[in-house]
Amino acid sequence: MRRASWRIAVVGSRRSEFHTALGRLCKTPEVMSTFKDRLLEEKAQLDERRAKLEAFQQSEAFQGIEPMQMTLLNIQAQAMATYSQCLLERLAWLEPKAVEA
Image (cartoon, rainbow, N blue to C red):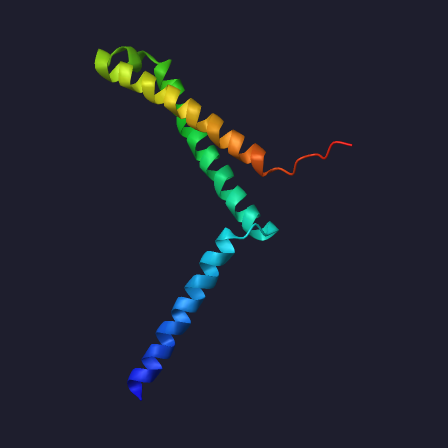
């Protein structure tokens, strides 16, 4: 009997996981809002780090680092700018499109 109750618990757990995963795939307003919120948070964190890097690039300390490190940080800053733009575009695609008359 114990074994049967254990199996029921596992099946119930899997069912819950299935419904959770299914909910993530559905484009309900609450799921989209959560997804959009995560994108907004990710972009805000990225932009904050990017601003700090750009401030460092303008500092005297930046001029004192090895040329290879300087080059790599410049590449990183450009990659962060591209990434930020991609997140912005993804957010724009989540907005409802206006229907042309």
